Length: 492
Image (cartoon, rainbow, N blue to C red; front, side, top):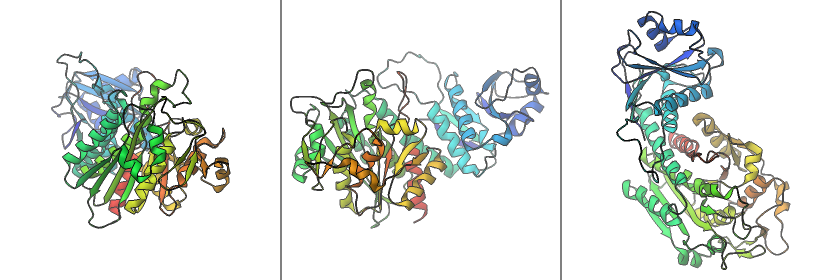
C-alpha cells in the first residue's frame, strides 16, 4: 500500500522524481499553466504539434522540462472542461497511477486534487485521488518470484494544494488498507486461501486493533447450533468450515451494524459441477467475505464511533462421496427447511445461517455482500453491484454511499411476486427459482431469513474481480461499505 502525505509545494520548484498534472483540451490552467509559463510554452508547442492530445484518459511523460525542477512531468488528459465530472476525475487519477506504476521512481507529487469537480470538495478529491492511484499501483506478489531486482517502485505520493489534507488522507489510508486486504485475499490461490486462512486473517485484524474481538465457530459448534444448511455445503470438502465472527466496540452500548460476507474459498459447483472454462475463477467466490472484512478493517483503522459485527461463513464447495445432493432437504438455523435443487446455488445456503446468526446481535441494520449469481452479471455487467432491500431508507443510504465513493450499486426489485418461484413441495423453500430473475429470487431466498431486521443484500458477482487470466480482485464493495459506515458514524 502507498504512503500518502500533503504538501504546499509549487509545481515548478517541487523537489520530486515526478510531478503529475492534469491538462484540459484548452486552455491550460492551474499547475499545467504554471509549467507552460515556466517552460516558455513547451506544453503549448506540444499541443500545437498534436503530440499532446489532452484527451480524457491519455497520458504523456516528459523528461527534463525547462524551468521545472522535477526530472519528469506526467501530463494526464482530462478532456473538455465542460464534461469533467466525478467519474472523469477518478479515471484521470487511475490513469496517473497506471503510468506511475511503470516508472523507476519511489515517490511522486500529484497536483490533480487542485481540479474542481462539480458537487465535491477538496477532501473528496484528495481521498478519491489517493484511492484511485493506490488501486492502479497494486501489485500481487504472494506467489511470485521477484524478478525486478533493485528497480524502484512507487511507495509514496504527495498531494499538493493549499489545503491541509490530513483528515482526508487518514480516511484514504484506512480505506486503501481495507481494499488492499480484500484484494490480497481474493487474489490468493485456493490452496492457500482456505477457510482456515480466512480465520487467520481475521485473527490478524483482531490482534492488531484494541477493541476488536474474534470468535471462530468450528463444525461441532455449528452442528450444536443447528446450522444444517451451512454445514451441508461443506460436507464434501477436506478443509473444514469456519464461521468467523469479528466484533468492534467503538460506541459503548449502542446497537451494532452487521456485515455478512459469503466466504466460499473455492466453488466447484458441488454435484452440479461447473463447466470447464469458468471454474478457475471460482477462487474469487470468497470476495464477498473479503469485502466485508476489508470494510471492517477500514472502520477500525479510522476508529469510527460505532459498534460493528462482521460475520463470514467460510467453506469449500467440493464434490465427494459425502457431498450434499440435489433433492436433499436441509434444516437451517432459523428452523426453515430448504430443498436443494442445485448444489451450485450454495452461497445462499451458507448465508442464510449466517444471517440468522447475525440477528442474535440485535443489529441496527445488516448488509451482506456475496458473489451470488451470474444472473446479476448478465443484468448489470461489471460496473454496478446489485442492491436488494425492502427497506427504502437503508437502500438509499447504500446507494448514496456508492455514488459518493464511486463504488456504485443499482437497486433491483425485491417484490413478493417473485417468491412463488421458490416454492417447494418437500420443504418450506427451494434454493433456486428457475431460469428467470435468478439474482432476484436469490435475494428473495435470503430475505426469508432476515425478517424483523433492516437488511440489504449486495450481489457483487460482476464487480468483485476483473475477468481474464491476469484479472485481479477489485476490492469492491469495500469503498461503498466503508463510506456507508462513515456516514453512519457521522450521524451519531
